[in-house]
Amino acid sequence: MRDGDYPPQSGWLFMSRIVVTGAAGDVGERVVAKLSSAQPRPAVLAVDRTTLPSLPPGIEKKQADLEFADLSSIFCGADTVVHLSSRGTPGETDPAADELDLLIAERVLKAAADCRVDQIVLLSTALVYGARTANPVPLTEDAPVRPNPDFSWAVVRAEIEELTAEWRKAHPLAAVSVLRPTAIVADDDLGQLARVLHSARLGVAADGDPPVQYLHIDDLVSAVTTAVECRVDGPLNVAPDGWIPPDALRDLEGPKPRLRVPLWMARGLAAVRWRAGLAPIPPGVVPCTSHSWVIANDRLRSLGWEPAYSNEEAWVVSHNPGPLDWIPARRRQELALAIAALGVMGGLGLLAWLLRRAAQKPSR
Image 1 (spheres, rainbow, N blue to C red):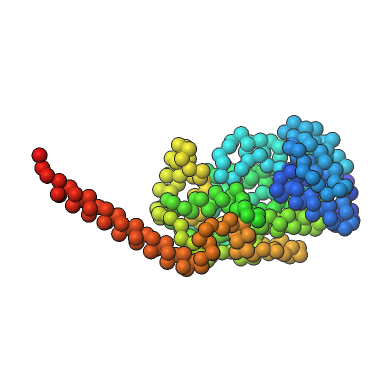
Image 2 (image 1 turned 90 degrees about the vertical axis):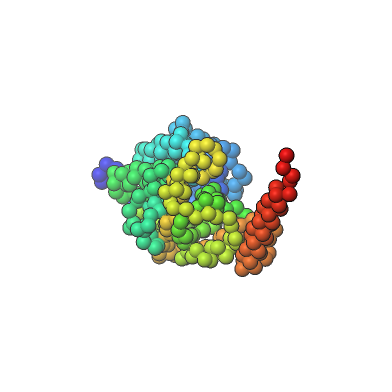
C-alpha cells in the first residue's frame, strides 16, 4: 500500500469513532444528536472552543480551540471527521475571521492526514458557484466553482474546498464529502445568510427577480449524516426540491418597499453604505439577489436522502409573523397600494395647503 493510502471502509458498521467540530453550533449540536441515535451507534466526540451544551448520554466532549489545540491528539483513532466549525459569518466582512477559517481548515486536514482519518465531511455553501446571469437553473455539482469575487465569505469557502481537493488527491483512498447548502433557516429564525439576502432585496434593490431556495436546518443535518453513512466522495448540493419563483416569493413576503435600480448602481450604493456603517449588506451580496444560484439535489436524493421541508414550508416556519401576516397576501398587497395612494393624496393636500398659506400671507 502506498504512503498516504487508506484501507477502504464504508457504512456504519465499520465506524468506531466520529469527531464533530463546531459541536456547540446550531448545526453541530443537531448532528451530534442525530449521530448518537444511529444503530449501531458509533462513538462520537463533540469538539468546540466554547462550553458544549447538554448532549445525549454517551457522547464524549472536548473543549478545544482548533486554532491552537493539538488536533492530532483529538483526531487519532477517528475514522471520520465532520468539520462544521466556522468563525466567518455570511454578510459580515471580517477578513481576520475568514483567514482564520482557512488556517483552521489547513490544520484540520494536516491532523487528519497524520492520524490517517478515513473520511472527512466538510460544510461549505452553494454560493461557491457564484450568482451570474449565465448560470443554468438549477446548478449541479458539475458546475464550475466561481464565487463572486467581492463576497469574501463565499470566496474563502471556495478556497477551503480547493485545499480539500488537493488533500483528497494526496490521499486517494480517503473519502471527502463537501456539502453545499443553500440559505439555511430554522424554526422562527431566517438564519444569517437568508436574513442578509432578504434585507438586500428591500429598499434600493438591483433589477432582477431570481428564484430562491430555503433549506431547513433539520434537512441539512440529515444530509450531513447521509454523507457520513454513505461515505460519499465529492460535492453534494443540499436544497429542497425545486425553488420558489419570484411571484410566489412576493406572495409569501407580502408588499415590501423596493426601488429598482441597475445592478451596478445597487452595488455602488451598497458599497458606500457598507463603508459608512449605514447598512448591513456588503456589496458582494447584491448579485445574489439579482441572478440565480439555485441548485439541484439529485445526487443527494440518489443516496436516499429526502427533505422533510419544501422551500415554501422552510420559509413559513422560519418566518416570525408580523401583525398583518394573518391577512392573505393579495389582500395585503391591496392594502399596501391603498395606503400608498392615501399617502400620495395626503402629501398633495399638504402641499396645496402650504401653497395656499403662502399665497394668503400679507406682503410687507
